[in-house]
Image (spheres, helix red, strand yellow):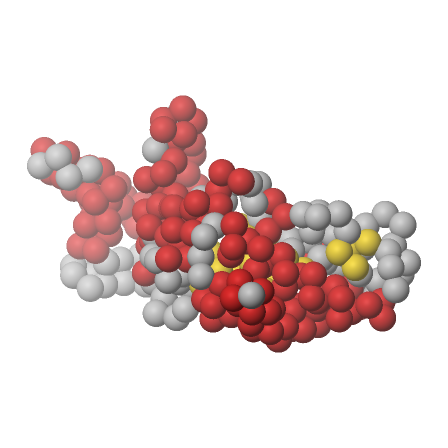
Length: 256
């Protein structure tokens, strides 16, 4: 069948299907889909060689995206942002049966939307967490979500001593300062203490931190060198091992 004949079949199917679906107020998109199914190999077989029509379908997608761009109103999109983000994220998460973690490096993490979408865990940068968001952290943790807390510095800040250097810089900076790399144990302890302090600030039982909090590098690991990435991951592993000990120390100090 020639290309011209195929195009004629496509147009005829659309002319017939679209008015019918609009009459029943079902929308044009469903009409196009139904028309494609009817003329395809599964029904009438008017278009049997699907591979030969791929370029026509690609052209149709381009036109469809162009029409969507013309009709899209940023103001309406902003009003519907919660529905779009929440439902869209829920569809993505529903498509997999594995443990799902949503990572967000934004200054304001939408904990509520991520939790409502059904994610099993949320990854965020502790240095960018605002005071007003700590209640949302507590709600997410109380709901049983895994808290992947980006507490370990990733890349050295200005004046760092080398590729492997990496003591935490100023509190909440998310970057490493320039001290002796041999101080890895103290860096790991400070990283674990940051996570435990977060748990205490939001009023969560410290005992749950060891099971529910996963200590991860802060945002920026993609820009780190291999040596810096290894140092950050090592610091996370050491901090996670120290966290139960710090919890016991906290309990002991509370009983004294």
